[in-house]
Image (cartoon, rainbow, N blue to C red; front, top):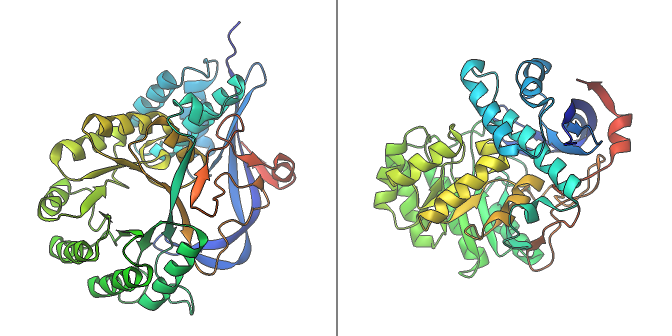
Length: 386
């Protein structure tokens, strides 16, 4: 008899964090403090479980009861494509209440469950195109912290440290609101120049610029990056305007990459490709609604002979790299001189994306997505279970 989905639970628990998010959603270093995380668990009638860390605000009790449970309970958990489509079609009547991220968390849990049922890591279920990938260092945004990322010289010094750690590619996130005076094309160019001078010509560099620049500001910044030999230029403008990105890409030799945050899953990514709005496509499990639509996006890019870079870190995005080779890197971050990215948080036994001295991240051998949860710690610190 085929196992079916029996329970869907969201456990909200406390853990320790050493970063915080500012008023505009950008992450920065912070003293150790208590935060709330959530663990989504999907269990089938044979007792197999799929688990993924989730954001509680996207999977509120009403979202679980009104949308997720009706679509999944009693269904075959291995029929991920059908279940994802069912959830995606519920969005039309949800009036914004069912987000792409919510669907993505459910999709990741189903992929994790499949890996545990079959005893295989998800990256192998996705095709096993490779078993490792080079990482690029993705910095936090600029700040006003002494010795942090407050000046172009700070960025240069940190870039040298990252190269010494083993990274052969670095992506800068520069100053964004609420930092005083941000955004600033002149300051961005100064930071990008300082980093290039510090690491030399053999390290690949990229810039994720503030997404509120005008066309003319973005063009000025893009031309400066070309002169500095940067590899790609990311999100300098509001991504809802595909015409603006087509205008920019037509005038620059540096590769324009996107979209990152544009709503519309893989369908929007197809519009960017056919409109000529980017030279490198973007996808990611939190951007498009899970692994299922992200794989579609990867192969869409491949059909157009385009690279498709995976946005963001974590077990889902690391697994996604097993589906294809038309994306070069794993994004490891967000990094800052005052934080230890390799520190293991209390709710994990180990991190999923450990990197060697050559900048290589090897994919996990554990079944499923590969997260090494400390379930006893999570249970002891659980506040609510929905």
